[in-house]
Amino acid sequence: MTTPATIAAAPAHPASRWSAAPTGIPLGGRDRFIDLIRVLAIAAVVLQHWAMPVMQFRDGQTLVSSALQTPGAQLVTWISQIMPLFFFAGGAANVVSWRSARRRTKTASSWLSVRLGRLSFPVLAVAAVWIPLPYLLEMLGAPAGPVTEATFWVARVLWFLPVYLMCVVCTPVAEKMAARRPLLALGGCWPAR
Image (cartoon, rainbow, N blue to C red):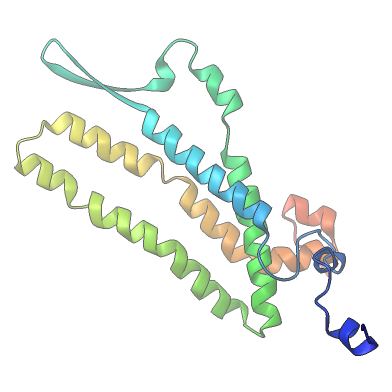
């Protein structure tokens, strides 16, 4: 038999977590759709960047170019522009995480230290490999041209990292701005008052 006490103790319908969120981002738990978008965006970025550099050996020389220099290949970029989706999903995940931390009375600085710590691990892993690797490859006799070009490509594809770090750092302010002045938040403008 259902009593008022058991009704009150029953978990709320999942849709209710959206009702109190003015921006449509859930107030609690994980948003599986955003998680899926993030995974797909990251996988697409990795696959595309692995496919971009092309090395050829011609007339005793190593030539390094981009797959996008193949005739017609640049048309693919009109379809495969994944970075806007990456930033959208990352921003939504940051807002969900920040709201959850704020409900647990975490400060912006403590939330940022955890969030930035999570981002630093993969960057440190890439740095740990790619800082010594060119020197090691040259010591082992690898041709300098391809090693230099590969190192350049690794550094080049990390352009988004400082931009994403700025997005993470701005999340607490941007979330507050979106609640007060959503149109100004779209332009990244902080209201004067």
